[in-house]
Amino acid sequence: MAAFNLTLSGPPTFILNGIPGLESAHIWISIPFFTFYIISLLGNFMVLFVVSKEQTLHKPMFLLLCMMAITDIGMSTSVVPKALCIFWFHFKDITVDGCLTQIFFLYMVSTTQSAVLVTMAFDRYVAICDPLRYATILTNTRIAKLGLVGLIRAVLLILPESLLLRRLPFCANRVIPHTYCEPIAVMKISCGDTTVNRMYGLMISVVTIGLDIILIGLSYGLIIRAILRISSKKAHQKALNTCTAHICVMMMSYTPFLFSVLTHRFGQGIAAHVHILLANLYFLVPPMLNPIIYGIKTKELRDKVGKYICSM
Image (cartoon, rainbow, N blue to C red; front, side, top):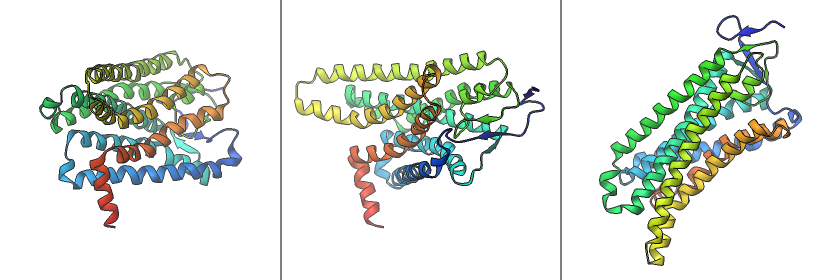
């Protein structure tokens, strides 16, 4: 079969066929997709609106919540609209450039979010272990710079992945068995050698998620050590409460991602639709629940959101 190269004479589109084996249930599957997406948008835009309007919330912690909200919106928006077009209207075609652009923005945003989670862990460490210097160590400007560093890191790591995919030759098969362009799924339909792509993808996972989890673990190790030195049970509880929301968000963000990556790379016996559903859950559930968790666990934010809701 004749092969084509994306940089030269490749056909203009790929075909995303949604969730293989569950085509007859696409309409039903679209209901939670759409519902989760709308709740995610409402929750995260509410966080951005309230923090921007309330001068008392212009603090490092709430700036980090805004960064998290932006990455949540970016992640879900990179996936859900196209998935709904497949489910509702059978619009399965996606241009090659569109596919590579989706890969870039989707994984750039998720990598940036991982950096935000690391910064949040550092924020909690300073708040508990060095509270008297919190205001001088973590200023809004410093938090903004850390967010920018996380964004730059994400761009520098993810851009080569898209460029490496562009170099791959593809044969007659242009069907991607997925709801969105996913690097491993794209590599599987290539008729060329994908060793470099796979090695680079693994390296990204280790450098970003692996390193970030180690840094978060180090922060919480120091936090636990500081908490154990406190004799007051009330102080113990207060210190733990300041970390609860971040721990919940972190678990929701990393667990489905790691499970999806591991099943893609090593779970060859798992059905394709299970792979795809797990991958989609990573971009659906955390963006929906993150603003809810922070709204419930952060009293200042909860009170301000309640004020705006009551005034409507």
